[in-house]
Length: 146
Figure 1 (cartoon, rainbow, N blue to C red):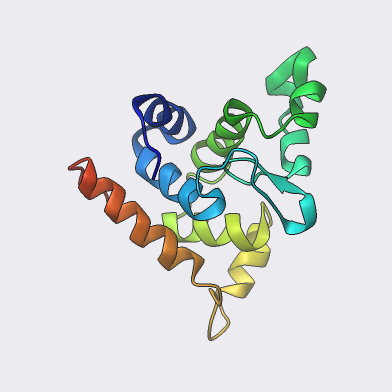
Figure 2 (cartoon, rainbow, N blue to C red):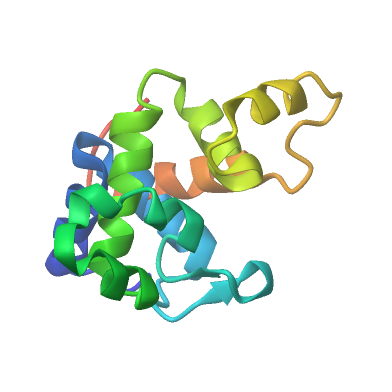
């Protein structure tokens, strides 16, 4: 994992004290490639944020919003978008639920809660992958995260 102090700072911007979780999401989502693209070309960047979610952040970015959304592979735009998701909009739900919501349903919490009722709510094992990577990152930095 290409991890430097600058990247740690970016992850702390994205998730505060939960920075090892942000780093785990980036590892699983993009492999630290800021130009990574998935979901048919819609999701791009470190956190694989979608333009529709970034559009919801327009008030935060002010007059520069549209240019930031167009160039949404920018790591700081991605970090701020993840921060809004992780620490503001969905901080009230458990981490595992935040991960499931993030991966499978974007911001549709009701959709994720319905999916959780299925016998196999995480068929891609996304929550497990991110949790395992987070534990490795936390151990590397001698942090205990729950």
